[in-house]
Amino acid sequence: MTAHDDDRDGAGIPLVSIRGLNKEYVRGDQVIPVLVNIDLDVAAGDYIALMGPSGSGKSTLLNLIAGIDKPTGGEIRVAGVDIAQLSDSELAAWRAANVGFIFQFYNLMPVLTAFQNVELPLQLTTLSRRDRHERVATALALVGLSDRSDHFPNELSGGQQQRVAIARALITDPTLIVADEPTGDLDRVTGEEILGLLDRLNRELGKTIVMVTHDPKAAGKAHRMVHLEKGVLVDA
Image 1: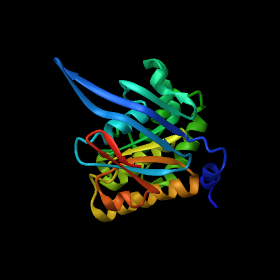
Image 2: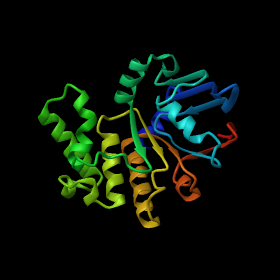
Image 3: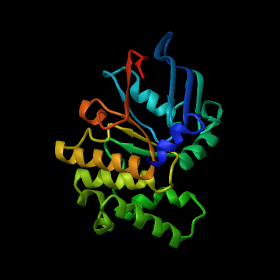
Image 4: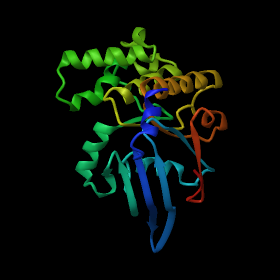
C-alpha cells in the first residue's frame, strides 16, 4: 500500500472539495457561463485527468482549483481552506505555499539557468542560501537533470525544459500539483517520459495531481478521468 492509499482509506475528508461551483464571464451586456454547478472531490494522493472538448471549461476549472482565478459562485476548499473567500494577496500567498504549476509551454525564465529557474519560488521563503541550493540539487536529481543545472532554457530540449518545470513545481513541497497539457508540446516518446515522471511523483512521493489533457493516452495514466461538456460535469 502506498502513502496515498492510506489517505484515501483514512479520515475520508477530500483534499479538494468543490461544491456548487459556477464561473461566468461578462462581455458587454452578455453573461457567458463557463462552469455550471460543479461538484467534485479530489482525495489526497489522487491523480485525476480533466478532459473535454475545446471550450468545455477544463482549463478554467484547473485555474480555479489552483487559485489562479476566482469563481462567480460556489465553494472550493483545499486542505480545509475555502480559497474562493481569500483576498488577492491572501490567494497569492496561498498559491506560493500550496500549489506547484506545470504548463504546456514550460514558462521558464530564458535569462535564468535551470538551477536558477527551479530556485525561483524559494526566493520568497526564509530559507538560507545553502538550504535553497540543497533543495534545488535534490529536485534536479529527481527529474534526472543534475548534469544540466547550469544550462539555459534555449540550451535544453523540450523534454528537458519540462523536467525543469516539474522540478520547479516540486521545490516548495506543494499540497497540490496542477498540470495544464504537460505533454502537449512534446513528441510522443518525450511525452511518455514526462508522464512516467508524473506517475512516479504520484506513486512514490504521494503527490496529488490534477491534469488537464486532450490526449486519451495521457489521461489513461491518471487514477480517474473527469469529463466536462459545455461547462457541466458529465462524469467524475
